[in-house]
Image (cartoon, rainbow, N blue to C red):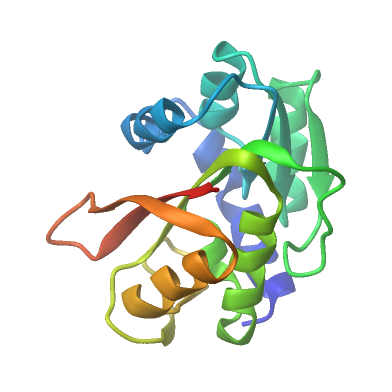
Length: 199
């Protein structure tokens, strides 16, 4: 699937993500752990922010000026209605250039939709986009090797790709960051939460 096709699938899911049925606690505990590694909040970025606004709410409550980025136009329309004070970027993370460094970056359940051929470059872009001491939390598939797949588990077709745990850790180190935390947070599912910090 192309990024544009992934965006179309998320357009179909946007209202579900924005509804009261969406589990607003999803990923919040993990973000609390990541924030414990961070210093005083200034700028934060929510990559694949979606429409629920839960991560933006958390970061704002910690004093961050938050920006959101998403590929789905429908997700962003709902996000803007929920948070009219937030700057949102409608862009493909593969092509988007961060306008300034960030002290905290969240890429929760988002960058695994990036084409496999661009996974490493996108991860490097996010980590290099951190200010010194900045923290990035992201999720990936907890597999041992590179892989990609397309399925319809959420309804519309969706593409996923992962570097594999060893290569992900190598990519973090290569750009001058440390892995502060790695957790299979939904075991036995292979949902992997990673917290990295720029040194």
